[in-house]
Image 1 (cartoon, rainbow, N blue to C red):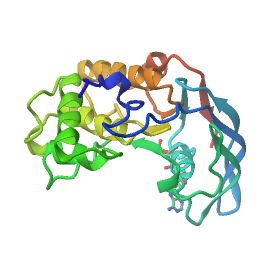
Image 2 (image 1 turned 90 degrees about the horizontal axis):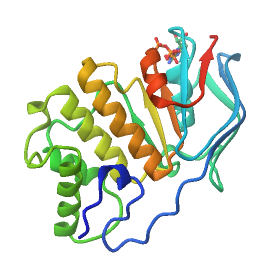
Image 3 (image 1 turned 90 degrees about the vertical axis):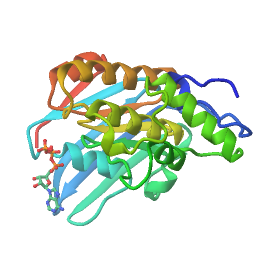
Length: 232
Ligand SMILES: Nc1ncnc2c1ncn2[C@@H]1O[C@H](COP(=O)(O)OP(=O)(O)OP(=O)(O)O)[C@@H](O)[C@H]1O
């Protein structure tokens, strides 16, 4: 099987599967997230394919709640009004599993009882034989500088290595958009630069619209896209 570089993994089809359509823009039309009936976040904008919208703002201003709402997790006392469109699909009211949005958090959240390879196989969508899927996982690991890590337990990896595995798992699930909640903040400065590059290059290459929540102005600068600040 051809080697699918990490930067293209999100758009790469697994062996035997039809190539997925490239994602369209993420359009947030008159979105209003309320908390106990009071407006918390208002947003009306379009995030183009490959563009990163950086969301900043004080603690408690609603950044994480906004991401969760976009991913389809809205529970009382929160409510969401407005429309969410991703490419040609209207996701308003769709359950999380139908949205095809890849989520990354500060903690990599790998399954501790599975090997690195099994974590990635879990994320891998599409068909193919077990051997093909295994080869795809190994190719993705090699692209991320983690050749030979498939049989390792996640708790034997450094924080940066775990983040790279978490990113691979998200990309192998062929998301149509990325929602990133402070994904770099637990990393040391050197590792952070590398993972940032990996994430933004992968998103650009696959044409994914990205919403990035961060407190770090350097993340916003590296993302290179528009920045909004929530008032809370
Ligand atoms: N389950 C909940 N029930 C009630 N209020 C909540 C709940 N979860 C969060 N909140 C409140 O919603 C508001 C927004 O919280 P959120 O976590 O989205 O802020 P944030 O901007 O991401 O903060 P931080 O930068 O500290 O992570 C806060 O006032 C918080 O206390």
